[in-house]
Image (cartoon, rainbow, N blue to C red; front, side, top):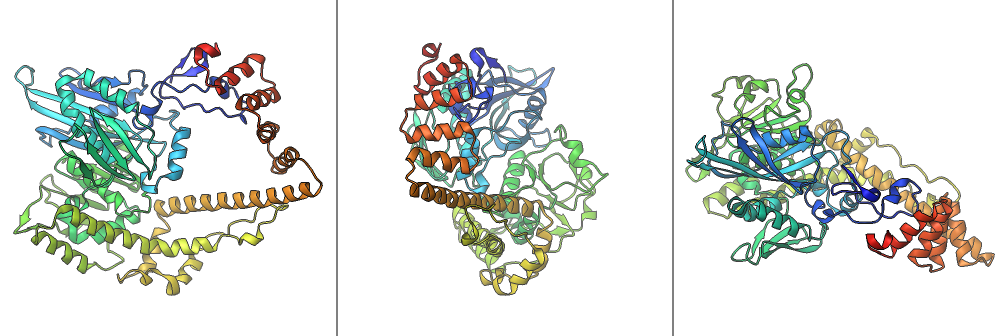
Length: 585
């Protein structure tokens, strides 16, 4: 990203926060907020992709205009923003894709660390990928040489807010296709007024004369955006029942495949079905985070096409959604392929696809089915299936069916995870073993065999009625990326907790020792920080703070301790007092 005069950064760079403990030149870049900082906490950019007779798909517009996308990212966005020719999508189509960021991009920001700290695992952002939310329009137009108007409005974001951005596009895209760039500029300016996304809090977001209300994961739209306020299920959840209608009887199998991070391909008739099915699949192990790669819509032009389709090694741990029949031959060596067709009804019930041998997946005319040799570890929950099918017969609303389905899957995943959480907690050293003058005790190593020995007394059978080989399921789970991701996250949390306890005990000990010697509050803080091996800069900062120095005074003395020039001291002192750029100059 390009630098602008004065050592500050243009929109899209890492927001710079005044850090009195950092003596590097990064701190000199100032405390000024980039122009599009609020916008960038929701979206990376908005792209308009059109069909050019000579170039094919081409990016017509990127907004804000100073966003820097690499050529590789632009090419990927172009191809992923249009349905392939086999889909035959006429009218308006919405779908999602996931895009790997180019190597070398400074993708991670402080605000994302803060967001991830409070967000549930399924809503956290990752530094390596963008999401693309697409509204594609293809209609007949005699004024165009090809006879069709083809254009996509694409929201590029790091946030996995499928439901929210899907609804936002429904409100914005039709207006955009009528008024074009002025409409887009107005909407982006409104988004730049939004507060940053805060998990669990209610936000009122202005949008096109109305209000988009985001409340603890749920959204309500009101004002002129819709004629009456409409409650959306959540910012990220999909209609699970709608997504899984043709495969309801195989839901147990899919839960196990996703839990174990198995390679899985979804072949669908359209990018809408493809992306919704993939996103629904990775959500069924919530609240456990899906730690493998996934691509809701994947094409032959994707930069990772060769990486994912090579036959020289085992298929990667990824869930792919595709629509091109060409992939039937490409993925013949993959262990699990779901071929979906248009949903057909058998009376009142959706026709269920059958499980078939992978060897049957050979021709382009391959019928819908689940092509796998996988044998489930657990038995099917026939009571759930009967309840859902009975709901179809009784015309039960889809959102109610989805709620039943989501609750069942949540309880199943919790039954699986609770024994792991209980065992992991037992590896934590006792609080009384944390002493001030010794290194914090270590978390004991995770032993698979020790864990297995706890299952008879505290296994999933305590909370789940499902029978089967739970032990075999755990053993295979230990070899999956999902276990590795879960374990690393829990170990990091426990390590931070231990460090926090140790710091608390040490601070209390130093404070009591110095208080007994009638030291001043300033000296107590100084020695406490010194005992924790804080830098001289940090000690000065906290010492001055204890003496109720103003922000100006603290920053002045802190920078002076770091031997900053008079110019550097004056700049940061004025910035702390929120002087304008003119004032600082």
